[in-house]
Length: 95
Image 1 (cartoon, rainbow, N blue to C red):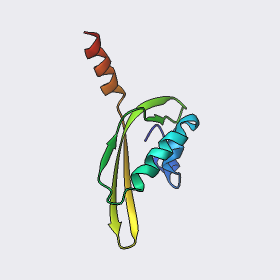
Image 2 (tube, rainbow, N blue to C red; image 1 turned 180 degrees about the vertical axis):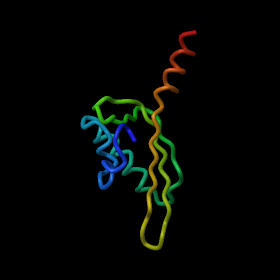
Image 3 (cartoon, rainbow, N blue to C red; image 1 turned 60 degrees about the vertical axis):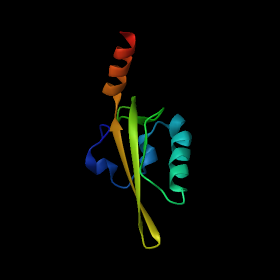
Image 4 (cartoon, rainbow, N blue to C red; image 1 turned 135 degrees about the vertical axis):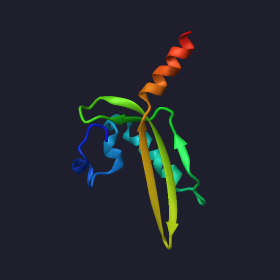
């Protein structure tokens, strides 16, 4: 994922996959989603970026789902590289 070997990802926080200057905004979005009284699945894809293992940034789409399990809330977060989708959009707009 993001150029990291699976073993390198064990135990790190998802925010560590974001470039340091963007972490505050990305973290605030995640906290806002988790504060919802009745969280529903949400897809975010505007101005979100992942950081590749070589420190390069790329646009991502993030899907956040949660599941209430007793008194705990389990959160599932999926990130997907959308570089090709963004490029296709720029190409269509240029036509």
